Each structure stands twice: as C-alpha cells, then as structure tokens.
Length: 263
Image (cartoon, rainbow, N blue to C red; front, side, top):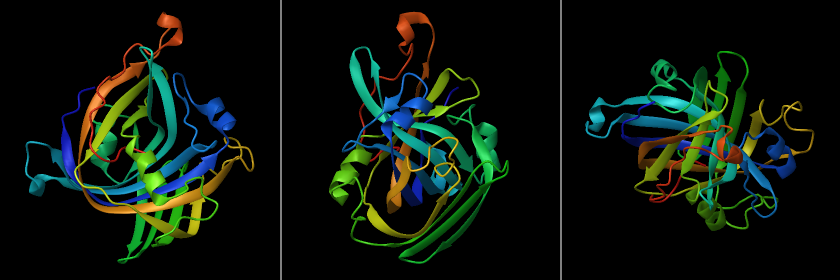
C-alpha cells in the first residue's frame, strides 16, 4: 500500500474514552500489541471526526473533500528492536465517504466500512449518531462543552489527558490480512481540547458482552477539538511472522511529530 502525505482540517473531533480491564484488552489484542496502562487501567475509545479539505499535500485546500468518520481504538504499546513504542491499535474504521471505502487498504491504511452519520451541533453542544451499513456497529454520543473531567475519570487533569493523547500519534489498523497492520502517523499544527460533559453515550462495541465481560469496560471521559490543521503520513506496516520469535518484522522507526496523535 502506498499513501501520499495528506493534509486537511479536523473540523470537529470527539474523543470518547472507556477505562477497560487490561486483562480483557490483552485477550483481544493481536500480537505484537499489549494494553498501555494509564493509572493502572487500560484505555479504549471512539474517535468521531469530521474532516475537511482532505487532499494530497501539494494541492490547495479548495480541491479537498470532506467526510464524517469513526475509529474504534485501543491504547497500546509494543517492542521493536529492543525499544518500547506507544500508539493505538484500530480494530474498526467507519466512514460516510464511498471514496474512503474504496481506497481503504489501497491508499488509506486499514479497511473502511461505510456508515450513516447523523450530526447535530451548536457552539457548545454536540450529538453524533453513527450506524454502519453492515449493522455491526452503532454509536450515539451527546454532550456539552465543559471545563472539568468526570470525578471518576482515570485522568487527574485535562493536562494529563492531553499529554497521554500527545504520545499516541502512531496508529496501526487491522487489515484484510490477519497478520498485517497498516500504519498511519498524524501531525497537528495547532492543538486544543476541551472536556465534554456527556449526556448520552452508547457503543455497540464497548457494550458487547461477548467482547467485554460485564463491568470490564466503563465510560471514562470525553473531549472535543475543532479547527485543527493536520497532516497524515503512511508508515511501514507491522507484518507478524514466525521469524524472530514472533517479533514484528517491519515497523516504523520514525518518531518525529508535533502535538497530538491518533488516540
């Protein structure tokens, strides 16, 4: 898979986070990934993101396209050449764009499933509903901009949460080939996030007792970010094989970045 450098604007991004039993995450993560523990807990989540002016970096923004997208992800760490890395594993991507579904796994990393998005927004209130065409995934999130985290959050402050997300700029997506994970690194050129006070949150993935035993995944926190200029760059895939005692045979070693990342 070849991916050109892609630029655009994150018009709106809602990050919905779940604290998850690390042992449960360990049982569902593929090698070489293992759960990243944050204050003793695993962390999963959903990114609901509207992108605008998406185009190859050499083209002007007016020629870009827009789409609504959702990514389910898990905070992970893994080893490469004796070095520990942090990032996210993305088991599922959904999009409103037919173009994304066509190019996913060819130009864009990971398989992209088509979905319907219903969005209602004001300056400080947000509601997003997503239903995949295949019926496998449903998400509803509604909330208002806030200045505080829930008292039960694993994060002690917004600053701590921001620092955690900053370290997660490298993401690997599941593909049609079970042992191959395609990489994507995100650079942002401006960065700000506000907590969301959640009024409604539903996730068919994190509420699925067949994946997460009852009580093993609980809503933790949510954030919103808007008007973020960014650039995506494809990274070499992780290809698992029998060589090197199960170590990844190909991973990126490029760790340069600016503010936020994938998670």
